[in-house]
View (cartoon, helix red, strand yellow):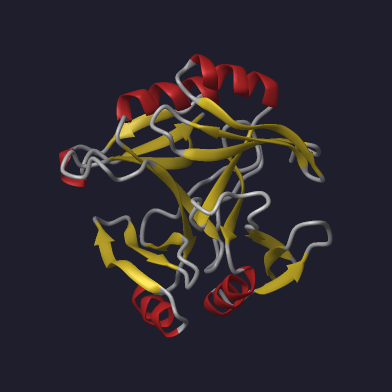
Length: 259
């Protein structure tokens, strides 16, 4: 089992889903990935933690009925050693802070921001909770990338904020990988009008590993999801882009070299 027990600052540490259809979402992701959900109750707005075989995977938060127009979406959180200091640095680097750093019980400190190109992401400074504990197996996180209209500006922002480096990937699309030392932590993809309609905003994309991408598509459609982009080959495996019953978009990948 590929473990992910430590998350140094600047590396992905957590993923959560904001949804207007929490019961449908729980049924969908349980069928698709085998997740089990724990409800934290009204004190935390019925935030749920999703686990698989006892391992931490992701979170889910029901949207408030007072905000019916908010789209359902997945969010990516990066580890932080000091969320308040990072909030100041985000502003200095041209980003915006949407949710100021705040403590969540004894679990940690969280905040939400946008990069200078408009993509939303989060930071998590742990206390007792350190994030997901398994990766790159069926139903677990496998990758994350930001899709943006200005990959150069995003590259400069994230490399400075996370004290990381960026490496250009050869090919037809403009793509960078962010690295902490020798470890690849995330991707940055340029959205051009030939592949993405102008209506698609900058956003972070979450990838989950699956054992069989065709079966994953079948299961998703049987449980109220849809296939946005059919399976296509990549150097790392076969990828498809799906949407859950409330429209939250995510990717699945059948890894060519399972961890």
